[in-house]
Image (tube, rainbow over the protein chains, first blue to last red):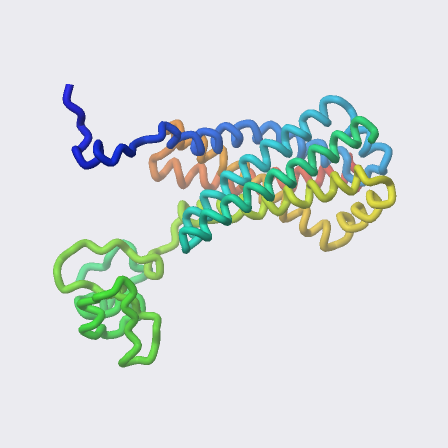
Length: 127
Length: 188
């Protein structure tokens, strides 16, 4: 069975990393997950409008909202970081700056997601 | 010359001059340097002292097909909605930052919660929250459209235009519904 690759391509030894669609798929999967999460979140905000401190902490602290909030923060920042990565890949000009800014955005996203999740856990577990 | 499909209207100055040797964007005559550009961005400023004429704006003397440049391309709903979807995604990242700030304020205790609520309750806070709500519902609706396309559904141009209008009106409707409900059952 002869290969369809050119001799030069074979000699270079580079090829598909088999990860090409990973970013695309995760972007779509997180998007699909965020649809119900954000509809729930918008509904909750409507219910919580004008609520006092006790009501808000009781809401964040109850099991289902706490878990859904954590999922919302994690999935939201994941989806957001992937989206910003695409924008940077499209428009950021020098190659090194593109690379650095994507890493930077991902760091920021992880830090913020960690902060948000920690805040929810602290409210829920009463730190 | 027949009117190219991407030209904005009939009496377009750019259209009248859409012939070899003229700048498509500005309708100015090109120079030999523009007709035979050596660099990718061959700016022509010698004659008119302007830097807005780029090599890609000039019709080439041979009959190679030119892709319509953004400057002379008629705006279409697909382009606009795609751009707003992307920009809105960027704006929602900022919204997520504010969500984290708000959660941290709630976690920090009643005093910081009061400060956060005062910020959210102010005119600017409410305006920002409204913009974030609208952006969220818009990104949600156009995002569902994008997911549809990924499954190969609704890719015909008429359907794309139709779902585009549905997305716009659904986003505005959902935003207004959420705010009306927030002021009635939420008591904001």
